Image 1 (tube, rainbow, N blue to C red):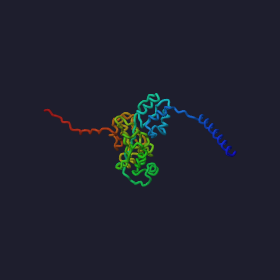
Image 2 (tube, rainbow, N blue to C red; image 1 turned 135 degrees about the vertical axis):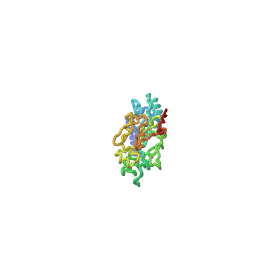
Image 3 (cartoon, one colour; image 1 turned 90 degrees about the vertical axis):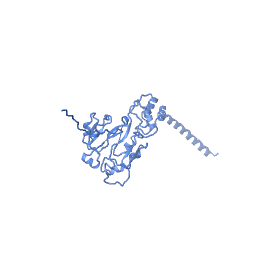
Image 4 (cartoon, rainbow, N blue to C red; image 1 turned 60 degrees about the vertical axis):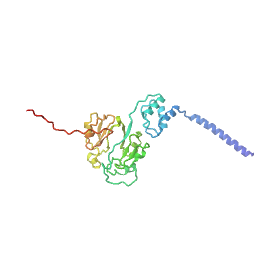
Length: 289
């Protein structure tokens, strides 16, 4: 063996040994000892990685839970209260129940209610159309009907209704992850409490234009008349920028507001049909002679 070859082997071996020693000390210096509870919590989560909890994924959420002093404000919308209870048991915290939510569409501007005035022939995304024009109905606040929300849903909880031109939310599948809320460029979709027996009341319109203008584009638009505000005894309805809003935390589902709305903009979900009032009959008065 030549001396050159021996020298090369020695030098390379020395470099390898020195590199290994340096890497060892670097690894020791920057090593991170992970809490074993993170793995336990992650396994107990649904693994949907939807981001509905506000974190990038289930692993990230598990790390936040383990490092938190208390679990108030943390919630997994996919797993719900059962999963959070399991997480609390692992970490030794008592976890209170959180009201479950569901996505609602705050626009009823269907093809029938808000007839098309123009036809859009561009890129079929709401984000693009929103930056381009008001929409086929002319309502600058209404649903564009191009399905960005449907495509964002990884739980198959939404579909586009061909007849109405509006997205439909399947409440049994909706986990309130909020992906559709973020995908809608017009902020039409809102997460609201499911309510007792899945009953909800909300104003299905976000149009802030004055009544006449709003009604011109959509016959079920909120016209900001305030009739619903006047009839609510619980201060659950506010009127701002020509638009009524029902606070689901204050609403008692008394249903007094919906019949007062002249444009039928207030939606009642999962309630039994209202009883029709019997026509008033003239009282018969017996005349005794």
